[in-house]
Image (cartoon, rainbow, N blue to C red; front, side):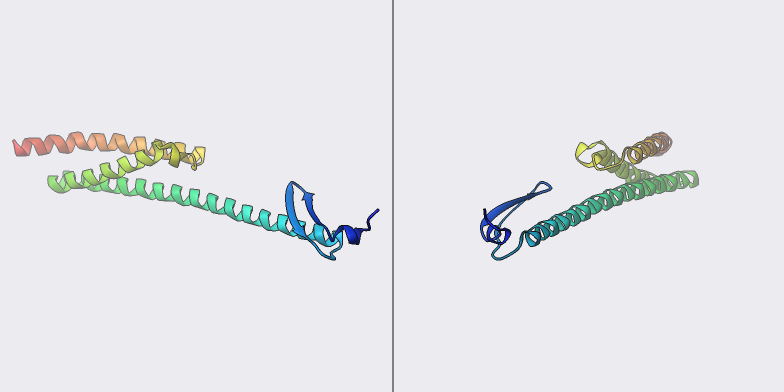
Length: 154
């Protein structure tokens, strides 16, 4: 029977917690070999944890970006309503167009499965509900502003 020291001189494959390491370990005791494998496992776990943290942070940034887009759309809608009430129909129509463009961007990102799979379910529901509210507001403004602009141009 070979001693542990002689056994460590041969090229071998070490299995430990599902990780396979190939290599020649000359004059290394088995405890050192196992320590090397454990270090590799620890490093792999750290890389996986960092990658998961980056995915979570990226998803949160995406949700924050969509919320900022939604807020800017509501701001444009409020500006359009204010300008309509003060009689500045062209400015109101331009602000309404900006709000509708932002809303279509939101709908694109929320309806595309490539983008929506990264969003938490509750965040996505909240964003969809707010987008529907924005859409209702924009439809109402379009009826008001569109009627006024048509009557002025006719």
